[in-house]
Length: 315
Image (tube, rainbow, N blue to C red; front, side, top):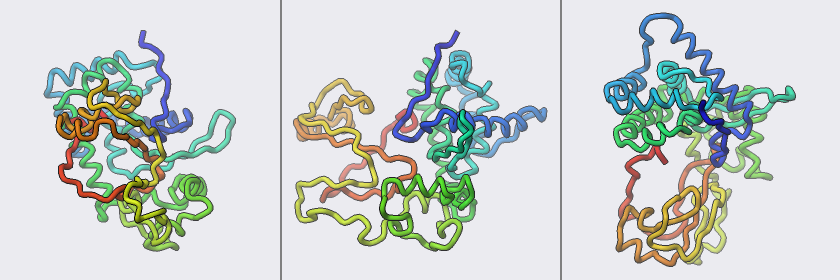
């Protein structure tokens, strides 16, 4: 009997409303079931087919996926790997939606779904088998390829990733969507804060989802206090403060999301850099899905050695 699992709020990247979570998964499950139940092999888009082949041709990954569906909580409604693939077919051909549903009292509620894949993997990943799977380099390589294909879709002006940018009930510029995006920037409005290509267009003139997501600020919308004080750290985006830790150790038990920091691990196990910053301060913040994601450097300086984690999906 699998253990009961509860939904968790990961900095706004999973819906706070259980009903939004359930409704979104149910919507995509219905579409996937039609594809699975039609009989015969299910055709997949190229990226999903490649992901499927990567999993099924690797005995370890295939076994771990089989175990995931045996171990997952009874709350889960995604019955098998093939259904998961069909759900990915739909999700990877659409921009992140603003999903609207009715709660248990019949009231209309809406929330952004920043990364839809999070929702369908949420309960599945909360298993012992998934813990092992997500740490495999081969699985992370397969996931990265899958996510890269979605990233290409979201930034391609020839595709329709901006279809979710509309003024309908489930559009980002609908009444609920705009209200959500303007909560942090009150009393300013969206068009007062960001460089909007066409304020009168249904999609505000954004040619792709990526252009909307990484939108630029209007000149003067975010004045910098004390720009000449080089000791100050400014906000890089519309990020919310998660934690400030002082006198951080070079070596410590490393759990970045649960607050213990090890500079050695954070700096890619570079002893020299870890020693240099030991005793310093770590400022950690997170971005919510409706926030703009155009990064600005918080201090003066030069990035010399950019490094990407080897297992980004696992993070």
